[in-house]
View 1 (cartoon, rainbow, N blue to C red):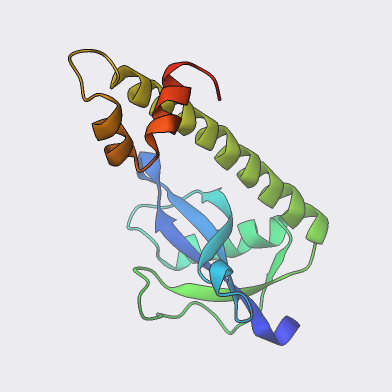
View 2 (tube, one colour):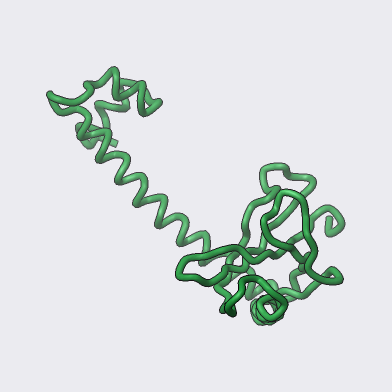
Length: 154
């Protein structure tokens, strides 16, 4: 199983002028996971972008969060805008905690997105808006579901 799964880390641009270190899983036996981010860590960056000093800081960040470098160093890989390095898990407890925190944040964001979507679908039922049929088509749901959302039934 270990030979079929690999993890890579790469520095990506993040908000506020810094970088984010993203660890991604590539699982050959499960195409649904290919390219899926597992965790992301903020990384302090120096002026000039993702240079050697930033890569060194990224390696320290990886080590502090349960990862070790599995390859000889950062290398360019097709399809990526930044060099990547292969990593392997060494402290599963830290990695699972970080992945769980990422999952919880994504679930919280998904709940907010769902609430906003329901609000818009409900508002589209006003007399001056779309109506049930057009709303159902635009939202890719059934008319019955539009009425359920409008009436707060589910």
